[in-house]
Length: 55
Image 1 (tube, rainbow, N blue to C red):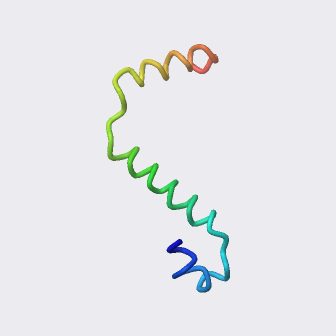
Image 2 (image 1 turned 90 degrees about the vertical axis):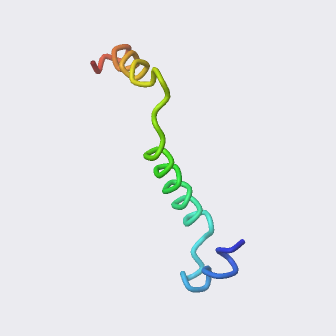
C-alpha cells in the first residue's frame, strides 16, 4: 500500500511485485547473515554433497 501511495508515480508505474521481491530478498539475506546456522547444518550439507557426488 505504501508503494502505491508514495512511490509508484515516481518510478514510472513500476509494478508492486518488483520492489516487494527485492525488499524480501534483502531482508532474507540480512537475517541469514545475522543469525547462526542451526546445529548439524554443515553435516547435513556434506551428506547431501556426498549423495550427489560433489564431495
